[in-house]
Length: 97
Image 1 (cartoon, rainbow, N blue to C red):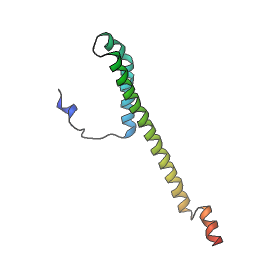
Image 2: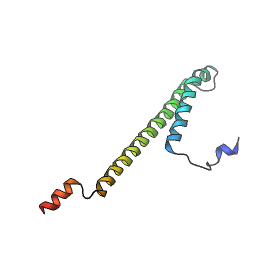
Image 3: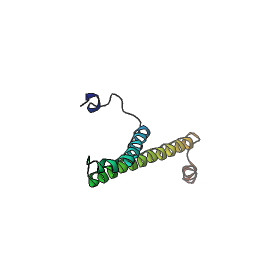
Image 4: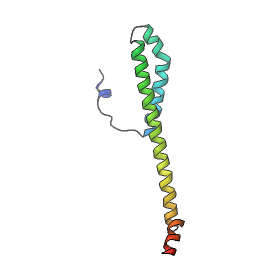
């Protein structure tokens, strides 16, 4: 077996690149699994299980990316409000107190 594949990567890629690769591999499996089952390389149950696991990984990577993008956008919006002074709610509470 090729040791360069089994060693830890020299560079960890961003989540969006991991999702791209995961999606690409899912497409390969969609094209190949029926043939691999017919050739006896794996059972239909194994193929379905592997496919579902990889599809789940793609799904969770996509959710994580969306969550991080939302959190980043929210933090940026809060930073903009902070730079302009206290948010309106805090200003009104300060004036009332």
